Length: 273
Image (cartoon, rainbow, N blue to C red; front, side, top):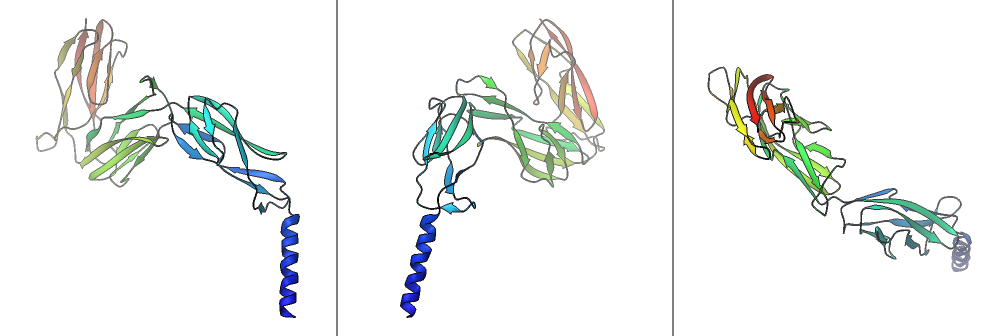
């Protein structure tokens, strides 16, 4: 009697399972952004009944509207081929779901400076910059996500500005997709009483470069070791300056290079001919 009852229940359960028909297709993730060429990621698709419950044993078919941009195989694995946009469709019989896929051509990311010594009271700031290049070696722009491995030493903003929080060492990470660049930041908390810059005057030709060095002194009159500074050029059309203090001559003229450490500044004159 017990065996008969179990058999009836099993048959009834199978009947209910078989009566469930796919009503929609669910795909994740969506939408998709792929950073770089030759990268892969996977889409997961499943059929759902009218109540949103998964229906097992359904084989989802996959198709890309632009295989030359992104290819998709029978398992839902995507491979980026070229920069652009495509629509990947997951289907079963008359049911379908479309997934927008965008491919961005990023190959390398560089962060500057790669090492820095942030000197001054808590809250002293400096800026990091990134250079992104595509598969052809050309510079491109893209969304960069910044993080600090030790926010108790230094925090980093969305724009790459690093602010000291306490003495120690931290690594600042800049990421675009799964590409990343890093900069090691050493923080020394202390008072800065005077800042100097060398050379005071420099002459370069268009296309040449000049590195300016900064000295920051504490209350005891001793300089901190290789302090990092915020560099600016009064006329960026004449010469630009990077976070490491390297100036590049761009056009004939004169500009003032300013280096700032913990709110104190020193200036130098650069002539470009």
